[in-house]
Length: 176
Image 1 (spheres, rainbow, N blue to C red):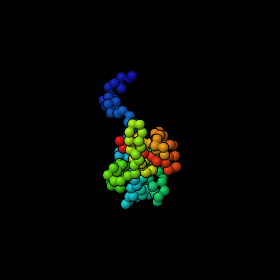
Image 2 (image 1 turned 180 degrees about the vertical axis):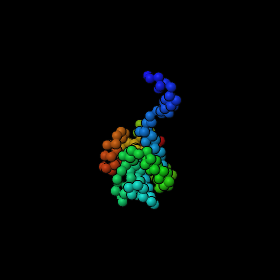
Image 3 (image 1 turned 90 degrees about the horizontal axis):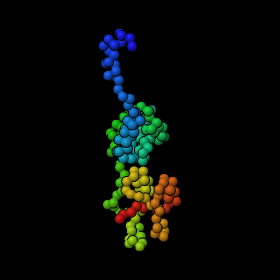
Image 4 (image 1 turned 45 degrees about the vertical axis):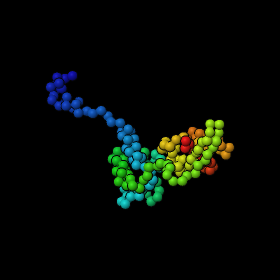
């Protein structure tokens, strides 16, 4: 290395200022997780966002942006951290329009009692909306398809869940 490089004052300063590369995919995931933590539903905004986005819909783990009722973009398609932060701030501001899904145990619900060799067993029959939200939010327990003979089959994949819902099969979770 030439001698004059060793004597330059700024050389070490430049090396010290270099920072480790940030992993923006992780930052994006963190922003998305924070957005999803407010619940699900549709946010109608008073003032349209860029590109005239007038509503944001959170459905399970998909955040979609709408203009005049037509989906124009999803959160995962946005590669600008600043835009993602804008979406987060809007969701934070309008979070009262969202709700976090929980089964309401205080009101009446349809139930099924089944008796087998182990005794009595009670299932809470779920609506299709309840079943989907428990499936995607991963809270509430194992979903089962309930058969007319009193037996059940564990729903292990999304395809079976959708088939049960479309065919009007009873879907339940264990109460006891």
